[in-house]
Amino acid sequence: MKRREFVGASLALTAAMPFRAWSAVLKNVADVAAKSLDGADVTLRGSSVEALAASLRGDVLLPGNPDYDRTRRVWNGMFDKHPALIVRCTGASDVRHAVDFAREHQLLTAVRAGGHSVSGKSSCDGGLVIDLQSMQGVRVDPEARRAFLESGSLLGQLDHECTAFGLATTAGTFSDTGAAGLTLSGGFGRLGRRFGLACDNVASFDIVTADGRFLRASDDENADLYWGLRGGGGNFGVVTSIEYRLHRVNPIILGGFIAWPFDQARAAARFHRDIAMDAPEAVNLFPVLYWEDNTPFFGVEVCWSGDHAEGEEWLKSLRALGKPAMDSIGLMPYVKLQSSGDATAPHGIRSYAKNGFLGGLSDDGIDLMLDVFARTPGLYDMFCDHCGGAYSRVSLDSTAFPRRDMKFVLAIWSGWPTSEGIDEKVAQMRAAWRELEPLTKGFYTNYAGADTVAAGYRDNFGANFERLVALKAKYDPMNLFRLNANVPPKI
Ligand SMILES: Cc1cc2nc3c(=O)[nH]c(=O)nc-3n(C[C@H](O)[C@H](O)[C@H](O)COP(=O)(O)OP(=O)(O)OC[C@H]3O[C@@H](n4cnc5c(N)ncnc54)[C@H](O)[C@@H]3O)c2cc1C
Image 1 (cartoon, rainbow, N blue to C red):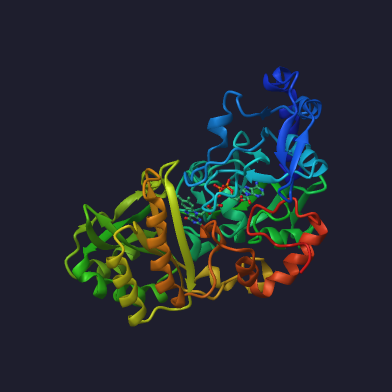
Image 2: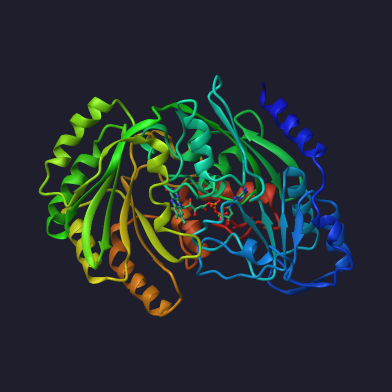
């Protein structure tokens, strides 16, 4: 089945399904106080909100509606935002109506897929949230090695469908992260050194742009947009579906975690650095400094997705290092490793993170990291994503993703169950990062927190920035989609 036929079939199915209740219930709506794009107060006529609801198969949720409170919440509990209205879309048609409404009323607009935004930008106060959580589904074409994903789907759904056919593509390391947000700004994952970033594996996007048009972006159609959507984030519209290229991957991988007491961390971290730089592409190493029962450890999560015997052989030197405090590396389903961290970052956790790319890592750099970590007990994790391999084989100008020549992404992360003492804890994190930041060059957009300023994003896009600005001027000249790693429509 060709791609076009698939889209047609899914829309036909949508049209045949009965309308859900909300559009019928939204009657006699009072005028709604909202925020415009530039933050001014605006009033939405109740009748226009009713008309919007009537145009949808999904729902319009207003404050006080059942589901409003649950739906407005995002993963990062630091952000407790109250949008004026939430449009719960069921497909591209609803998305078009929502985008038209937002544009015509010049409303502050957020787009939400999996809701994992570290910076909380997938919700807003007083604006409109275009919510894609009802748009979930993945269809795999095993012969063509393609997955067609509705843009509200989570990574676990993508992995689950693909692995049944012995296929996979690069996805992030937590199964409840949204595929769309992760992919649009890059997408690091355990298969990335073999197959590149998640965005490098996209064959096409379907998107509703700011003017309400439904476009396909691929090598053959709207190639400029296809370039910008692979790393440029949510700047150009609302992506409604993503077509991924898939690869043969044994559903059973060699993976797990090995950790050493902190007094061995220096030697273990140096050893990791040395083997990581030139490691086979079948392996992804994820080193992390963490606390358990108030005791610091250095560990490395391993995912070897190649031949098992070769992997066992390669791992011997890592396993022979010092006296590990634990070693759980063994054969396991890839999808099990992919969801192994989920419980450590539950929905609603108050989260703060900082990150930066590392071009390399000196002995002094490692010493600094260990020292900062040991002095910052409020810091939950310090970790490094493993780059190189296929990430680096993609040239800088062939996608909008800003860095291709880096070795690692260094990040610090904390998550607190309550907001008690949070300002002081965040201040500790900022102080820790001030010491580490000089080691880094640029940052990974998807890990950037709310305190990343517009100029920071501009500098970070570097050589790709001007091309992104031209695209923004073409596809979103009013900057309707500004709650993201925002690119302005003119410099
Ligand atoms: C626990 C956790 C683990 C993570 N692990 C990884 C990892 O392993 N690798 C990695 O690379 N990143 C990882 N991230 C970062 C993650 O990639 C980003 O947080 C990403 O934005 C999440 O996507 P989402 O769809 O869940 O987020 P959302 O909050 O729904 O969206 C984030 C932003 O993406 C844009 N967006 C989302 N959907 C669309 C759409 N359909 N059309 C247009 N714009 C859209 C919007 O600008 C939105 O503000 C992790 C984050 C968390 C919280």
